[in-house]
Length: 143
Image 1: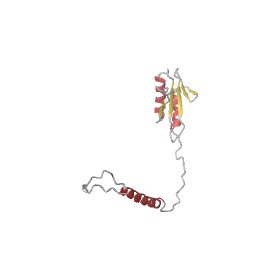
Image 2: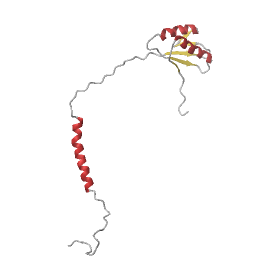
Image 3: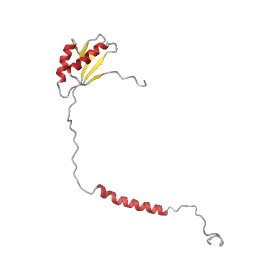
Image 4: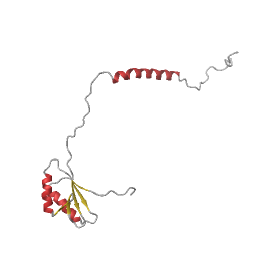
């Protein structure tokens, strides 16, 4: 048994093409130990009793008022027919004084005249309603 020491006349300044990873592993182990020691100290340094979570509704959302227009131009407050624009303004004025003010949602028939829907919008404006929305049917999926 013997060891090969190389040629006696060989150049001793040969290039080593392998990387020595031992110092890298040593540094990583030291950093890991430091983190394992310091993390529990940071998270549990002071004992506190934190307040419990509670959810409170601060502002109630008003109900929406749904006004509808059929193809003949008749106006409806939910399901009851409104005889004319003047009575609609009176009913909307009573609702407009509430705090918070409800939203008026307009449902118009596809074949209804624009004039009928315009009357409702004008009545909302005269009554002082600030939130007006239109209810439409969403398009079919994929369109």
